[in-house]
Image (cartoon, helix red, strand yellow):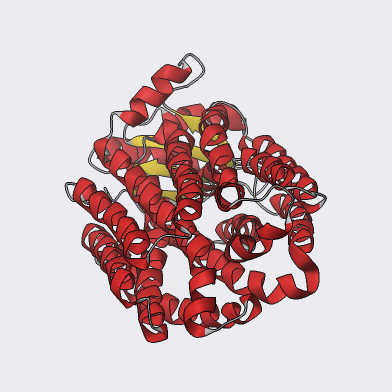
Amino acid sequence: MNSVEKRAILGVGGIFALRMIGLFMIVPVFSVYGDNYAHATPFLIGLAVGIYGLGQAIFQIPMSLAADKFPRKPIIMLGLILFAAGGIIAANATDIYQVIIGRALAGSGAVSAVLMALLADVTREEMRTKAMATMGLTIATSIMLAFAFGPLLVGSLGISGLFWLTAGFAILAMLLLFVVPTPMRVLKHNLDNKSIGEQLATVLKIGDLNRLHVGIFALHLTMTAIFVILPHQLTEVMGLSVRQQGLVYLPLLFVGFAVAIPFIIIAEKKRKMRQVFLSAIAVMTAALAFLAFGSQIGVGIIVGLLLYFMGFNLLEATIPSWISKRAPVANKATAMGLNSSSQFLGAFVGGAMGGLLLNQSNLLAWGLLSLVMGIALLLIIPIAQPPYLSSTTVTIPKNINIQDWSRQMLAVDGVDELVVMAKEQVAYLKLDKTQLTDDSRQQLSSLAQSPLDI
């Protein structure tokens, strides 16, 4: 990876980590501490946990559509401001309805897809797989760390203190945004004259993308529901306080993470993404089915959770990479927005479902969650392997008009996309090598004013 890509991964990864830790620290403790708010009921507690997902689901798509037409960074900044404001409202809440409002406002800062699209802009095709997998692992790790540290911190900070941390993390994320390079995208097909309906239709016609949306929906539905149900079961079965439960999540996180890494490498390097992806869903389905019968004893809970976390890490790491490969060049943010909307809609439904299942039998609660993952597996099975494209890096020649130079580069046959970072004097060319000819290679070398290895 070059220095531009490393900066981008550091900045975007840091923003993701701060947002995810802030959001998910609440999840494993709120079903217990939420009773302290006025007007709290099991359903409203579950709603407060999952409502941020509804805000994300509603606003991901419009923000992503805008990010395919306008610069991405101002949209990300707006989302982080809303995220911070929601944390402040929840931190000052005295009843459950105020918490729900704060969580909903935080969720309306729906910029996950825009962040992914920004990262895709500033990474080469060959490095994009590694970058997206890194983001997937960052997201999965951040969520798991949040599940671990939320219970450890709530005793000293209280629920309001965790919400204040959420707001503080949002401010830090705003500062990190300045670390990420600012790209200028140049596309063969301009979106300025495309309606929102046309943008959406282009993406919704791709069946494999829709299957990925189903996968992320089921993943976050089950994950959110689990952490509404689980704190009570760990107390009843293993006698653990909420603070002690964080010490259960941490080792499971690291073991599940370590086991998942070799399979992520196999998926990317050996181009076995489909096989690994479907296997991960099957493992998660089996893990939830195991919990339906084995969660009456501590060992059963530990084994079931470990299997689930292994599959969780695999899916979180592979889905962003797959979306970046399969999405149309000019509609990357829109495709990622639909995926993020599905993700957070799943979290919303999972939070509400977890609240409803809180007082149900283990067989019913875990069995229903296993059924959700099983149905998702059946719907996703027809998915094909993602395409594998190529790109190259060009140092922008000195003393040229970058706009004119970009248009000339993009006019060459075989060039699908050009991303220019004028400050760094670097451009990325996304190439379809099946359309490259000897003449087009010579044209590109001439425009680059140096030989290109393509």
